[in-house]
Amino acid sequence: MQKELLISLVSELKRGNERAFEQLYNALAPKMKAVAFRYVNDQTIAEDILHDAFIKANQQVKKLKVDELFEGWLRRIVVNESLDYLSKEKKFKNTLKDYAYLGEDIEEEESEPLGNGISALQLMQALDKLPEGYKVIFNLYVIDGFKHHEIAAQLNITEGTSKSQLSKAKNFLRKLLSVQGQLQTN
Image 1 (cartoon, rainbow, N blue to C red):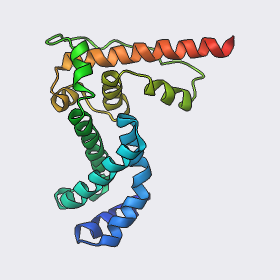
Image 2 (image 1 turned 120 degrees about the vertical axis):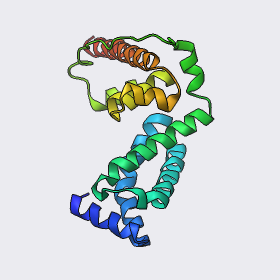
Image 3 (image 1 turned 180 degrees about the horizontal axis):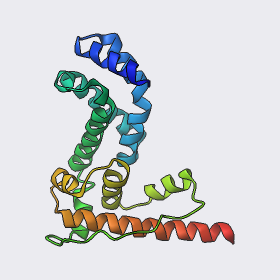
Image 4 (image 1 turned 90 degrees about the vertical axis):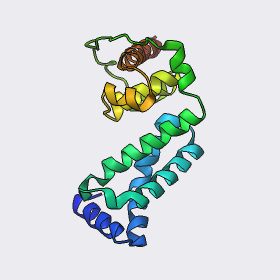
């Protein structure tokens, strides 16, 4: 969506224009549904999260001070709604407890790229195979750009646990993609 059109639609939405809401929804829904799907891995639930996020955004849009930041703001709402869903379903907290390193301050290691010649589809399939705790942290940090202190606050874990989960997720992905690469070359 063009920046000028986005700003105009958000401005109209703030004035209560339902048509602007519909246009924003139609333009941003596919991208935001993909964000939700990365966390919950279920199309129907991702659609529910998307719907809830847009309703919340519509109700709170007047609080948004810079209209051009709407898409990023909406993305954060979608992520938060996805995490709320996982938390309510207890799919995430139980897996983190299994791997928690409470109080540890793990230094983030410099890591090599996941691999050359890996397609986006292969990477997405590999991400789907991550254990839930790894997957959530990987999505939050690598894809959605959260910092470890933000993840820790959001998920009620320590920064060390967040860093540990990210490190383990990267190692898991490296091994999985390495095996896939070996299978393709044989």
